Length: 129
Image (cartoon, rainbow, N blue to C red; front, top):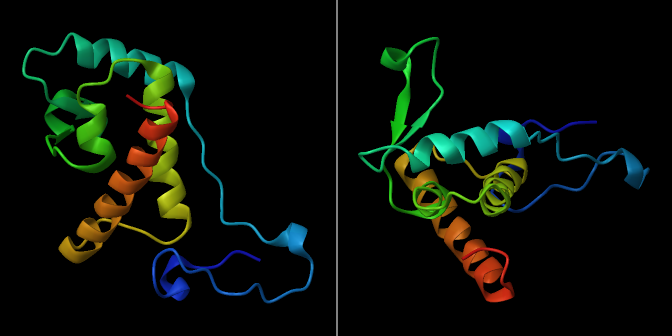
């Protein structure tokens, strides 16, 4: 009952399910490891260069580095509170589940713009600083 993201068409617009049992309609799964988020907050807070490393392999030489200042990535670069980061990661993950991506430049711009709008809504509600 799962849809391939490529079949969704426009990001944020979900196709009607092909079955008539609403409980079977699923966007997918998202898992967050709270202990990992807490550890990353501590590691990033101790980082001298202000650039958050993201796990990319078995050693530091294989790691990718996030230095973007927009969207969730940019917002998290100065946030060391695990609960606040989890809110941000949920925004990013939910956008993936509804068809957004950031592989191509135009997709990136669309996803980051949506992230910024949702983050602003969360700020207005007091969930994210």
